[in-house]
Structures are given as C-alpha cells and as structure tokens.
Length: 431
Image 1 (cartoon, rainbow, N blue to C red):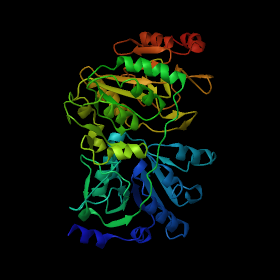
Image 2 (cartoon, helix red, strand yellow):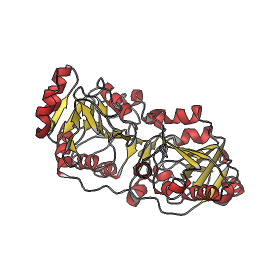
Image 3 (cartoon, rainbow, N blue to C red):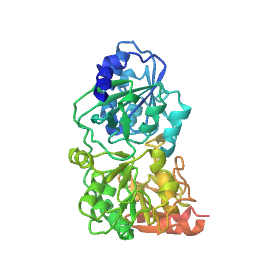
Image 4 (tube, rainbow, N blue to C red):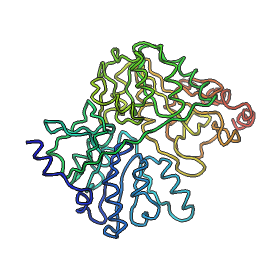
C-alpha cells in the first residue's frame, strides 16, 4: 500500500513545482536539507519568466540555494525573506551596496521560527530533503527538524526530495507518505561542512571554558573553531549530556569516546537532543539509524523552559561585540546585518535557569586585525543578549561572571579581559 502511494506521487522536479504561482510564499528546508533538484526546477521557472515573483522564506542557506534561487540575476523576481544571514546573503548584499538590500532580513528567535512560518506567513509550498521511505511508508526529516516538521503540516503543499544519502534520524522526525503531495528522487551527496583549524586565541578561550565544565554537565555547542576546540578538551569528562540546537561532528566524537552518556539528564535520558545537524559524510553515517540521537522541533529544543529542566546546562555562544554593561551584539557588524539572533538568547536563558547551569559568551578581544576592540562603551548594532541575561564572558585574557555585579563592577571586570591596548581608553568612558 505505501509503495503504491509512493509511486503515485513520484514525479520529475519540473512537474512538482509546475503548480507554484507568481507571488507565492515558498519555505525551503534549511542547511543540509535544502532540496537541490526542486530548487533548480524553481530557478528554471523564474529564469524562463514562468514565475514573475517568488517569496522565499528560510533560516540558513547553503550552496544549493546560492546556485539556484539566490543567484544575483534572479533577485528582481525572487525575494529572499531570510531569518539568519550566512556568507551567501552577505556576499549578495556587498555586491549591491547602493539602493535597497536584495535580502529582506526577518528578525526572529530560532525558537519562534516555526510559529512565524506556520501562523503568520501564508505558506503555499514547503520544499525539503528527506531520507528514503521505509516499508511502512515513513520518511524522516533527516538532518533538519527545526521548523520543517511544523511547516510541512501547515503549508498548503508539501514537496519532498528523497535522497538516499540523507540519514534516517530517530526522534520526532517522522513523515508519512500520505502527508506528501509530490515526491522527487535525487541521489546526490550531502554537503560537507569543514571547520578551519583553531587559532591561538581560540585555544586559550577553549581552555578557560573547558575548565568550567564539570562531569555530568549538559552541553549546547555551536559550529566553528572555538566549539571544536572546547569539545576536544572534554574527552576525559564523564557522563556529559547533550541538548543542543546544532549537532556537530565534535559532539559526535564525545559520544564515540564515551564522554557523553546522557544518563544524568532529566529529559530524554540516554539520548542526545538536537534540532538540526551539519557535518561531513562520516558524521551523517553516525546519525543514520542511531537510536541514541533524538531530533525534535526547534520550538521544543530551544524553549528555555525545556532546556532548564536539565541540571548543569552549559551553553557556549559567540558574540561580535559586548558593551561595558554586558549587553551583547552577536549579529550586526560594520553597520550591516551580519547573521541573526538564532538561538543564542534561547540557550542563554535556558542555561541560566538550569540548576548549576552556566551561560558562556565568548569572543576574541579584538577584531579587524587587532585594530578594533570587541569590548566597547556602546554597541554599534542591536542587542542580541540583554545585559540582564548575560552570565559569563570569556576572552583570551580571562573570564568574568557578571551576575550580581553593578554596572561599575561589570565595566571594571570587562575592561580587565579586554585587549591591554584598549583598556585605558575604555576606562576613560566610565562616568
């Protein structure tokens, strides 16, 4: 029965997107779940002027979108509504310095993205990559649960691209063939995401952070050189847990080395919880059919109330700027939107509310080749993490716990971990 239903919905990518009309709101799966064949078919319709206007909603784009709908020459007909800028959007914005931005940035917390897309946007079609169907008719959303599992059920149409390389992932990730309107098959390698080697500043900061992480802590880590450096120092820890928005190869290595058992967690005991994943082929193989992995929607994973149910949550996030009161700008740089708020504040608040928890904000002390201090009298962009929520701040010159400190005490403490070149100037700005 399931296989018959599958065959009845199987079609070419061009046929799957043929019913999409000009002016429609389209949501695409994010990161590894971008569906390349469906995106290419949509781009072809735009190129041939079959679609005069298309509103594309998404959180984090990668190369498939860059080569198709996010090509510069199509942006007079495709309007990107982006909730988290990546390198792709930054390059498009830099290429058009004058006039209106080619990207409509939509400020939203990652935890609220599902609600935004399912309740406030009239979504015509959701397109995403899924893992192959099993004999009972079930796909999984693979690497990307995030807003996908919610929007897949609220959009008027659901088109899936079945890729045999997409891992079958346990948790709240199932999708039945009866829920799908169109199926496209595409056997193509998943994108690999490699992290650059860490720099000396990262290694120093990582040692400070690792020293704060006790056995039995529950981890949230991002992607990048600093989280990788921290994870590399935790391999001798015991009974760590994972409740993170992003699952990475660095966290997977901690599981394989036995440092992570999840046995002390209050929620999802014995399982590593995440809402999306990015890595390399070996990492995707690790996720595939692994019952210790639990994928869940972002409104659950990133809800501070759920995060804080676990004890000793340690959240590690990066920032671009921090002012002398402790407010963090983690998304705006040199007068332009650089990324987005993502799930930073979700996990800052969840970790702080956890019994024995620690929210850690890390940054290098300087930027632009050492010519700018990241610790500043006033932020030059929006507040991503308010000063009321900031807990521990770490640079290569040390760390400070801001909780319970007055504004003057905070300023003094942050100046002490700023680059020595800027400390005198920063001190002169304190009233």
